Amino acid sequence: MFNGLMKINRWNALLEAIPEYYIPGFLMTLRTAVCGLLLALLLGLIFGLMSTSRAKILKLISRVYVEFFQNTPLALQVVFYYSGLPILLGGTGTRIPKFILGLMGVGIYHGAYIAEVIRTGIEAIPAGQSEAAKSQGFSYIQTMRYIIMPQTIKIIMPPLANQALNLVKNTSVLAMVAGMDLMYFTDSFGSNTGYFAQAYFASALMYFIICYPLARLARYLEIRALRQPVAKIAIDQMMEDSINV
Amino acid sequence: MSNLFSQIFTPANFSFMMKGLGMTVMISIGAVFFSTIIGSVLALIRTYATGKYRIFGKLIAAYTEFFRCTPNLLWILWIYFTIKGNKVAISVFAITLFTSAVMAEIFRGGLNSIPKGQFEAAESQGFSFVQTIVYIVWPQTFKKVIPALLSQIITVLKDTSFLRMVDIPEFMRNSSVVMGSIYDVRGMMILYGFEALCYFVICFTLSLVVRGYQKRQGAAPRKVVRAQSAVESAG
Image (cartoon, rainbow over the protein chains, first blue to last red):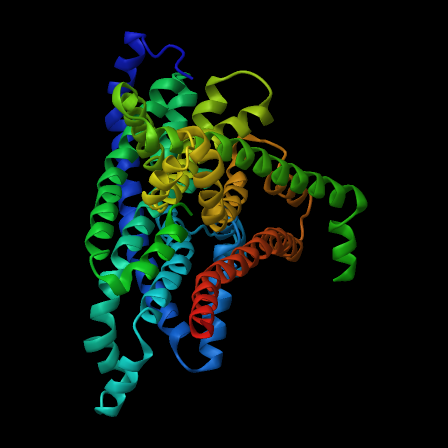
């Protein structure tokens, strides 16, 4: 694993490879992660709200989405988007751009987890508040906007930060479909030169640079949110669910 | 259509894919087994190492942080390309290395939730530190973390699909080998559906077990309270 880690010429080769391999890979990973997170938040919000609505059919759709994407591997989903989906869409020889593949992959997968986080967050707010709001003439959107969401957000921030961390790590599945991300470039530098120890060491550091601040943020938000006693049970539950997905 | 089915799921193909599924399950069980043991030892050391042993706690904290902030796939590839030996054993090792860090966090959460008073109570009853851990703290911790452990099995099972990249004959890799021999587009879709279905059945069943357990766990304290109030009202 650390074979040849001490050889200077290999480190020089790594330094030379940084502009060609690691910078484009790092940027691609970062871009995919940011856009994927936005998509995941959007999907999570939509399906999270659907699962707390009173309409049975909306609840069912949201349930199916969450269960299906949580219980099948992300790798399978991404490989399907890569080789199956273009055929389904009817094009022959058309390929979905790698960036879109990554964004869809992590966005839809983590959207399912975020939907569950948002559902738990909304359900942690006592139902009496919605009823009280209704009796005061608030519409559904007004109730959500002014009463439920401001409280929910404080509870769901720590697990969301955890989800963001896992999402960044999961962008690495793009390497399975030659996705031009950090993992892909690491792999290709490693197999071009045979300097695997250096290649993966550098890559691990780069993932760490993105993920460590997110891990600290998750911890900070958790400590802050736990000061609200009502939130304790919900947060314990969600953090346990989101520790690693 | 039925013709297509019989073309894909020939006895040879089917048993080949099921062998892959068996491999997936075996690798997951192996990795979860080892990482449960390693993770619990790490969590115990990190939580209770004091004095001159505190450095071990620090090292374990660094290990868990570092692995939590890097992808599992990275460790699989790194180890696969740099260690020689039995490929399946290496895969189990790589996944164990990664999952142990997660397990350590899970167990640490469980250990931290045990009230300090229990140590004092045990000490007053003449329990040694090791006895306190073995007979009092650990059984409660383990019970508390069972849902998180089971969820972790789901995660590991899904993550074994990364091994397709290093050509381990697990379920997803074997299925794509079969897919390579099917030239019909509908056949491909059927195979993707079949793969998703197999993963889904296993993972969903496990997640139902987790939810059932959580529900019972959640209900237990209330039952105690009810029993207590029944005693009080009876008294």
